[in-house]
Amino acid sequence: MTDFFRHAWTIAAKDLRTEIRNREVISAAASFALVVLLMFGFAFDPSSNFEVRSLTGGLLWIIYVFAGILILNRGFARETVNDCLGALTAAPISPASIFIGKAFANWVLLVAMELISLPLFGMFYDIRVYDRFGDLLIILALGSWALSIIGTIFGAVTANNRLRELMLPVLVFPMVLPALMACVELTGLALLNEPFGDSIAWLKLLVGFDIIFTLLGSVLLEPVLHQ
Amino acid sequence: MSSAISVKKVFKYFGNFAALRSVDLEAPAGSVLALLGRNGAGKTTLLEILAGHSRPSSGEISIGEARSREELSRAIGFVGHGQRLYDDLTAEENLKFFAALYDVGDIDSKLEEWFSRTGLARFRRSRVGEFSRGMRQRLAIARAFLHDPDILLLDEPWTALDDRAIEFLSDLIEDAHAKQRTVVVCSHQLREALSIATEVAVLERGSLAYRGPNTDELKAKPESLYEHIS
Image 1: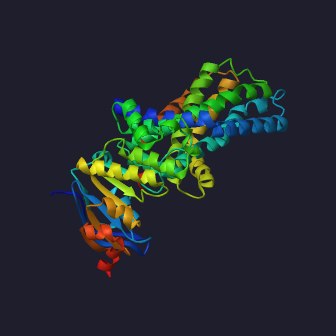
Image 2: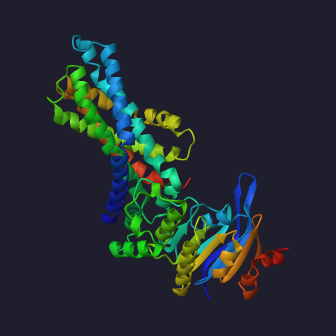
């Protein structure tokens, strides 16, 4: 078990080191998020209209998902250069540790992009995002993990595909939909500072989704990589 | 002498194209097998199958005592066309990364040794993306040897190497041979391959066209090999 997590961490640390050095993905995703925030800010006038404010959970996750796809696209794509994916799959490590390492690196980058854009979102929409910051952090962490594991599985499927930039969103969005519905509902309540009440069921769904697809991804990655 | 590598009736199809046709091949433990042939003969396809990166369409492969995927991975060191190095990492980070995946102990002294042997010590903290083709090839060779594998599969290892680097690689292969490691060198460069080989196999259009021991005659006159085939 120790070896499993050590190998996963080695792979995640390599991906994060590469990203810190180049900032190729996080800067693109954060810029995209900022532009869409600005566009939505001009399109709606959220500060004066409660109905629009009630849509903010959905708006936020639309931005996160589309910006997140830029991050997820690079996860396995960077392994295709110089046949590094061949070296990873040939190494004497569990394919599940490759999956967890890749998913963790994607998750860190997704959460970083979300935390960069969250204060700007609060500013543009006149929402006090720090009133329920603990709740928001939990939702972001769980939602981002859902996006990351689905994106990592399909990132491996499309890694050697010439049209991977187009294929990945088409495959990821339908699969991640249940988790996104939960995120939208819970984030909306947290941003409007309303209690979760019965919506706690969405939180349970999100946790269940994360557990099931983490286990499924760990099992599925080997046949996917050796396809 | 027992076989380190055994290939029995292996076929490999890409669509309708047969890249390998009923190939039977054995490499004795501790031998240096030169797997020769012209472009498109099926050398790389066979090497990829031996390394476990590709599955044969039919036939049997056995590699030493390896029974599981993990044992096979540990038993094999592979240098292919792709070089398998991360451009954005330094030479040292690349070797440390693979050393961690292969659970190589005493990493620091191993790195010292390999940077010294490859002549890349001055460049260990430079990004691989800035390396010349020859420097990358030397680093790829170091990566393949780093975990001290029993079987080395080298696909066109002399590509882009200068005279000194060719000598360095020949020394490495001789050293591996002395340690009873099995080496398969896949190449269309007859002279270099035959200078270090103990066994010779030639593939032609996916079939095994020649198999035999290397001889002084072949070493002296490599082009005579194709006379055996015709």
